[in-house]
Length: 82
Image 1: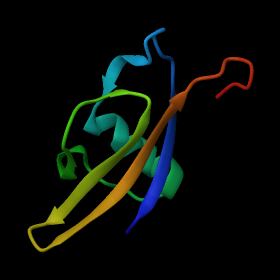
Image 2 (image 1 turned 90 degrees about the vertical axis):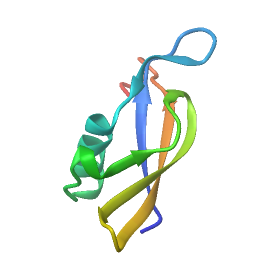
Image 3 (image 1 turned 180 degrees about the vertical axis):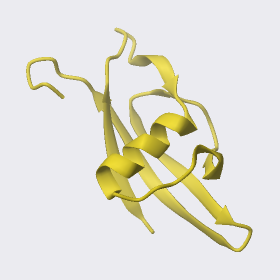
Image 4 (image 1 turned 120 degrees about the vertical axis):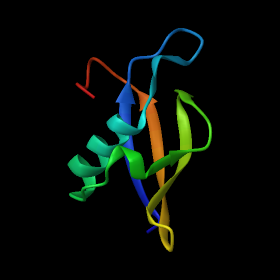
């Protein structure tokens, strides 16, 4: 609950991502960073994630069990390897 994960993405000059981030990718990020398995079907995205910034993600494990995490999308820096 109230966890935060980061992802680094290549961006266009205007700050948009080349492709939006989908539940399947978020599921993998959660597994990698939080060591918790969440299926893509359990991830609810309110609006498309296609820019850098911070986004709230709803996770619905069961009709009575739900939580939120924060996804921070940052610019990929090729020099740092992130």
